[in-house]
Image (tube, rainbow, N blue to C red; front, side, top):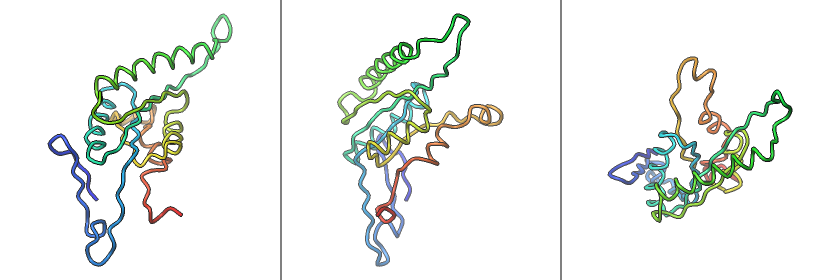
Amino acid sequence: MNIKPANGGVVVQLGAKESGLHGSPASPFCIQNILVPVDFSDCSRKALRYAIPFAQQFGASLTLLHVTQLNYAVGEFGVIDSPLMEGQVLEAAEKAMDTLLQEEIGNLVPATRQTRIGRPATEIAAAAKELDADLIIISTHGHTGLKHVFLGSVTENVARVAPCPRSEEHTS
């Protein structure tokens, strides 16, 4: 199967096995829920712009997810008020998500948003499972070399642990 953007939409090219040729039955290809992790970067906005026509073509809904990883530290004057800081971070993320939903999606497709605090790859995989997501459309920043070694790749980690996409043949 080959999926690629084309003229404001998405083209899905099926191979012989997927299309039901050569006597094999056609595999079901149903996408209803698409998870789009965003970090408000240009890369994640590009992934969102790719997800919108994909959702339109398949009649799917989008869930935008922003995960903030907080690193707690003890300051010179004592421990930081974690619940207060988490609340402020979530509130700011929710406002930014609302703006993103309005600017990029509007009424083009059904869409919701979630914000979480935690380790991004873990939270994205957990959200995909909880939402029963059929597909995750996620961007990468394309770091290479030492920057990649030190920063790691959330996208790579999500690909390793995410529960989707999954084939109906492999679930029981």
